[in-house]
Length: 289
Ligand SMILES: [Zn+2]
Image (cartoon, rainbow, N blue to C red; front, top):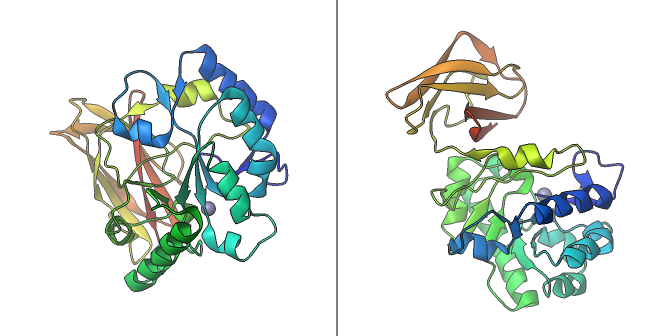
């Protein structure tokens, strides 16, 4: 997952094209095949497949990133924030630029108004998504196939609303790998930044998980336990809660890994990510206030 290119003032969402060129070269030298999302999701091809997605639709992709993708002949999927385009926000692409980009990659939607969906009621989420789809259809003359959450934020409730639109796939920003067992409504993406060690990132493998607790942000802001089903046959796992610190080792009994905190943890951030790791296999979830 990428956002901005050569915009040095945005340290966590921008990548320099020099760093990205090194990463692209690494993929090329090590037999990775960069394919369009549609090809990845069709699951018809074997081998080490990669898809690049770019969120928001900043001008800096057009001005700096595109050239590099063309140089390597790598496809991409661009998730556009539609209101920004319609209202000509200065940092964002225009419709004619989006149309030009659609010759080299797939265009998908990243909501209409880029709001925090977990703060909206289902009707507002539906309306926002309908606006986005209508506008996309008007300008690009086709139906959008993919959706990515603004800020990567979702809950089981928001996912129910978005998945009812029948997108081929819905993308979040939870770190993890994917496999052909991945639920297409919850596709993980891994950010590539200037500090990213691409080799290490590619070493992460898919871990099948079913999150049982917490399923939503606790109303009293206190996290008491984490329970996750890991049908992997492994006996040990490690669990990490963002903002809390170290990986905590735990045993897997049956196929359940559970951590009960002696002292409930006071959650201070509005977005909490929880990771579980078995060897180099990783899964994660998030809860949003
Ligand atoms: Zn965004």
